[in-house]
View (tube, rainbow, N blue to C red):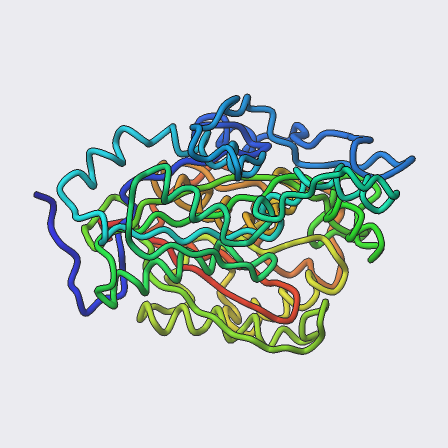
Length: 399
């Protein structure tokens, strides 16, 4: 039996994980995509009328059929989640075989739920087609967590977190808290969001979509690319090769759709994660930026980094030019990236290669993927509408 983590320590073990995104379906594809310069986004005309936009679409074939018991809530989101889950399903079932089902919990982050599967019906209804059938249950926020609970036959706590772009990072933090509170023995956490017209048109109306491939911290940055992803993690208090060390959260509530311009909330979240982990900024071997490539977000995030890391040149990059902004799943897919970095100990994700903003070009952006020394801790930032901020710290059990 592996060594158990000290119950006084918030650290929990990542026993299993799986992810699907524009980066591919396995660790090898993900590493190649993040350490090479070729484009992983695709140009699509499926979402906004008379306009093509770059999106981070997942090309991995998804599960075609769901079990009959889930037919009433079948959505692309659910098929996305089940496709990812099947990568680890056999190992997951073996891991929890001796644990009472009432001690098995699920927390999922999402921002779109299954609304994409109602979009055509909603359009028909708005156009006066009274026979259009909108199945509300498919787009309810708790739909996915409950569906996964039914699929697995678990009976513990199951709920969804929807705080826009911080949703799935908060799901990881919430799972850690459940374990440390003794309310569950194992928690399946993660995030799932799929491409849909609602989000693409919403961000287009905010004039936040990039005209090309997004350029985090770039001189010519002009907005985001939307992406889709599913990433799942099985957490327990049992130690594992990679660990969720701590989470720091803050809520600056500066503006409904804009962060505090000085990065106050973002800095508080990063510092809170460090304090809970009892680490110094110099202990962080890599920082995954939220890095959306909008003018305001990037400027405030670098100010926050400067406040927390000061003169320490932490290696950092944004990965959203490779995945797109995966909204409610962003925190989870970037957590998966951080986990793979710690597992491999050979590479870091390249930052985008366009000309950097002169006012932000004081940081140690990752320009060469090769990692020449072992790193023990990495941090990942997720910042959302309304100032919902979270920073996660991951580590290795060999520290």
